[in-house]
Image (cartoon, rainbow, N blue to C red; front, top):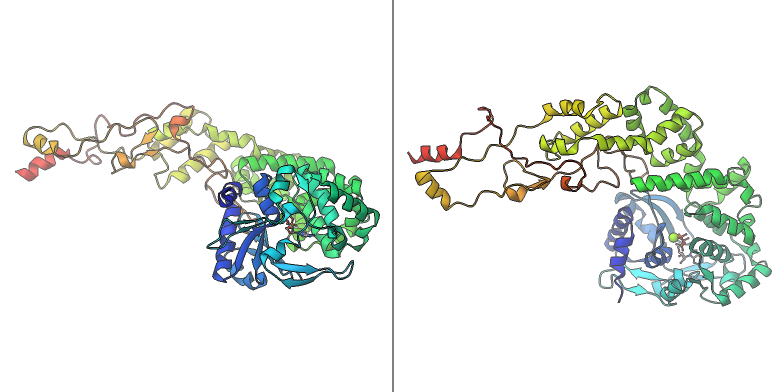
Length: 540
Ligand code: ATP
Ligand code: MG
């Protein structure tokens, strides 16, 4: 049997995983049964990007609001009818928690009558088999997959299949969803589902779509990996004009959009997690009138998305202004400024900057200046015992990086000259060979530590057991956003993605020499008296 918890753990981002435990703890403390559901399960199993975490609780999630906020989640919207909470979790992870429910559709075009239900009943009100699965996160059944419609088989067959014949009649927004998923995953709509879809289209069921569903479908576009492709398919099916009468692909700034997606990928590769949603919406609607855009805003349930989209230009202008001022007069200052800016703003400005100076600075920040890090002489620093074990290491590493950025250290020699004064005193030399009775006594003592291997650094005062690999500690280029998506200022922190410390031995540069090499003439101040002498003194 597949281990879905393991699959979940390896597929979710670290921030999403933290989000799962945050919500799990809060639900458990409140005594509510919690399931990971919908698209999150589909994407975990299918291997596609997991855009957001969909949770379902048996009970009313609105009661969890305060506890969730205390635990660090930000509630960005509440939908009273379906009892759904929309959350922003630390690190730009999005989630929603809805109540396990049944939906009774009594009149076409009217919202369903919602009643609390079990998870099993809840799965029956869902749109497609691949979205009608739940993974238990409860003690006792954690890891159990509920898959009453064999969604796993449809994922394997790459099929989008409705759960019953009235699905599109009950909720015509499912036609838009089917088109969106088919475009996103390149999956087929299953034959009978296609027949129902065609009939529903022909019968103009879409005229009965609920305003709230339109809002959901508009917002969903913000998080597509290839939004233009999805929008083109929606247009072809006639659904884009359902979302807004004036919306079509000629209103999209496709150039800007493709630049945005490329830059986003580049930033993701560097370890940032920018939420591109607001910028995607900006480009998808670039040529719509202000009034039309305001209409779209009114429909979207997640007000945090609306606010960020609305303010994106103003915030970008503010950042551009700072980038042309004193605050960014040197490369190191610019680095610091951009490191504390929100990754979303860097992303947006990288694509929209009008001034060449601003554009160039962002470009340097994302490319050229990162290569300067390679000029930090890590092997030599290890030789000088300037390693992360030193409390002042972050500051030294950061200062070298800043000076290199500003061209104030132009050669390796200059860099080493700068570094040398920071080298800590060498460790005490090994005791000289013992003679006579002292040697006999020492014979019973443990063997001296084995010589250090390449890339190992002796940790002061401790033996071989405490030997550490010298990490490639480079001043961090980026700040990780906090719960509100704001970057944490202040350097140096760990570099976002490539933070994994590399042992020196795995680097191309010259291997580090054993760190505990004794100096030829130990300074009387620093070197303790030889141990053998001490022993013989005691014995006397
Ligand atoms: P995405 O990857 O775009 O988030 P998703 O399938 O997770 O896709 P959501 O809008 O996040 O879509 O909804 C979460 C889940 O809620 C869906 O997987 C589905 O089970 C259910 N759902 C959403 N909208 C509908 C709908 N109109 N009818 C029935 N079930 C729905
Ligand atoms: Mg989802």
